[in-house]
Image (cartoon, rainbow, N blue to C red; front, side, top):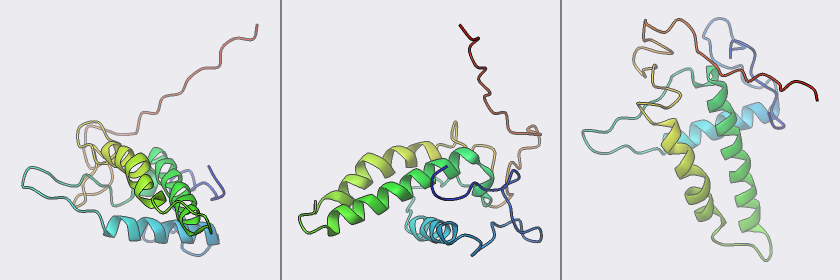
Length: 143
């Protein structure tokens, strides 16, 4: 992971609520604030669409990696735009080149990382899944 420390193995730091601990690492706190601010702006329209999201999103390593990549790119876009000879379209580029592709994956109800989660029922509420199956590639044999 980037300059943010990785989330604990179970994704939580706070035993009581299951939520990531706030304030342990200033970068983590800034990252969590950024995620909350970004997703407070997400709009889903139309009766056939729904936002696929897990209330315990931090328990999904792929999601954390994607959001950290988005956050890092967003910080770079803001800096590029604010530079003296900055690119005034940097944030627009961020939306198109970074946010839109990641959003399509994150919110895909059929194949996205939250496909077995529910905003109402919680993390991996689907009773058929006892654990998350992660791909574990083997190292090729030494030559």
